[in-house]
Amino acid sequence: MAEGIKFLQLTNKPPFPPMDGGAIGMNNISQGLINEGYNLKIFSVNTHKHFVDIANLPEEYISKTSIEFGFIDTRIKNIDALINLFSSKSYNIKRFFDKKFESKLIEILLSIDFDIVQMESIFLMYYLPTIRKYSKAKVILRAPNVEFKIWERLAHTEKNILKKFYLKLLASRLKKEEMEILNKFDALYTVTESDMKIFQSLGANIPMTYIPTGMDVTKIVHEKNNLAEELSLFHIGALDWRPNQEGLMWFLENVWDKLTNEFPDLKFYLAGRRPPQWIKNLSFKNLIILGEIDDAEAFINAHSIMIVPLFSGSGMRVKIVEGMMLGKAIISTNIGAEGIVFDNGCDIIIADTEEEFISAIRLLVNDSEKLQSLKNNAHTNSKKNYSDEVLTKKLIDFLSNILSV
Image 1 (cartoon, helix red, strand yellow):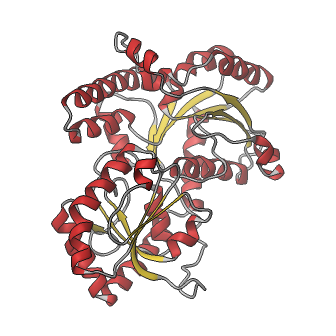
Image 2: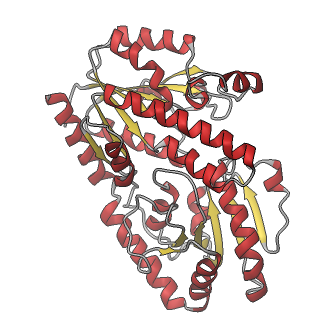
Image 3: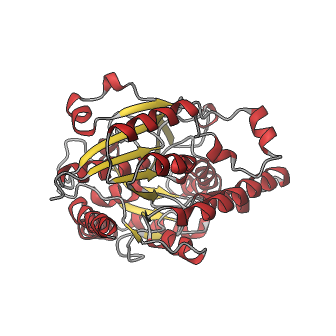
């Protein structure tokens, strides 16, 4: 136990309630630190997109985390974005700097003598000089993604010349700022080994490790759930995130249309937060668009085959780990499964082309034994590699080493 260590978790969006992969990752860190006896305080950015009213949070959570919010308007403004074209700074990062938020951060730093300040995401990097000025704490960056990689991959798949140019510009500025700031932290950790190796290859030489997002693997596979599992496909993820949108449209246009001819009764369920109107208006045979749902676990348990058609992005897809933990069959692109420990064909099936997706889905729909084997192996994998308890120990060991330097 790490009794008495004062830890400030600075988050770029509310970590609670843990409704998406980013929030789940941050909340798991919070709970792990609390369980290990750390004196935790959370100071979180609140935005229009991810707004949380503190009055709606559980009293126990507020008591254990001493959470406070600082509102920042991070909405993209056309004039600001246009002016930023003539700047060398990343507009993605600049939107997260706010003087009032900085003032509140200073107040917090002056009121508590923190041992560690952990910054969630490179988007908060402009506050690093402020932390250095007002605190002697070790400052650690948790990087859930290599942000510039997301935009590089989006640029690569973009066909519109002007959009491709703009995405490349965003990626290059993000890369420049990410690499300039990394070695100014005392340490950093990613959620995937591949992301850590990218940072190392680009010159990051501070103490570094990777710690995946864990899950509560004590949850059972709901084989006898009252809601009988349907032999169907499903996808769950943030529907306002561009990599998800592009991957889903590719799947629907290139794979699903062909599959419904071969399997006329097969259904594809789509769930996720903040679906734009154009997604709600999609009209494909046997596509059921649910949008935001109240119970993600119940939704996952109701269906059998998770589809992750992701061709851009970075970091780790937490929903894949959740699907593995709940014993689902998962078909994903290589990029979708990036950073996850798996044996292709044993606990996950990798598909990067329409032929591979169709072949994998055909196999699982027609072969119930293979389907069940994949599901069982996925659950076993999750217990071995993504236990909250095991990953929290790795984090605590890493933090202890940083404090001892």
